[in-house]
Length: 273
Image (cartoon, rainbow, N blue to C red; front, side):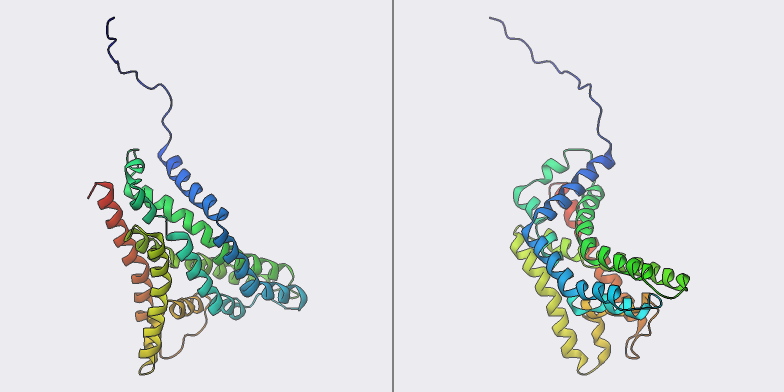
């Protein structure tokens, strides 16, 4: 009985577009996050403790326009920062670490995707989930406030709505690069989650200790620096001890440095190092 040679048969189907592959990664992370019990609990608790009273106040008590100071204070609540940190730790802890542990990079990069595309999909999914806490509720609150205002100065209210959108985007994105970076540094999701959560509090403790001597050190607390940035977006005055240059330098480094480290780590894994 002869041996039939194995011959190459070209695949006649259509290749999926690159942006569709990125979309699949993003959608998978978003759907997986919404199925997570921890994510659901955090979102429900955050709405009850951070936003519920604000919605009730807007609906029951009269107001002439959407006030920038009030919207800024909604973002600046310590509870929002706390829930954002917790949600970041839960969402991002396994996004990279699980791929490191299961060696899934071989599967991802066997397709025609680049490090950038992989990170866009991973970060995009995390940002979509974070938006359910940091973007959608405050923007919805602002819209409800405009619809129920008694005054006729809608233009001022719309400008505050615009500031709310900008602040919502900023707060949504702020914690994600840092959480992803820590996830890329370990194969254990528990280490990444605890590291993300605890490092924020370490910075807060250091900020509190040094601010006893100079209040300008408050900028190295992620929660407080985020609060100052939101005040600035809404046109509120910053405390006299806060240097705007130092504040924006810290905020930029808190986003850019983790993003660069994350890219470097994933790039090394993509080439098998």
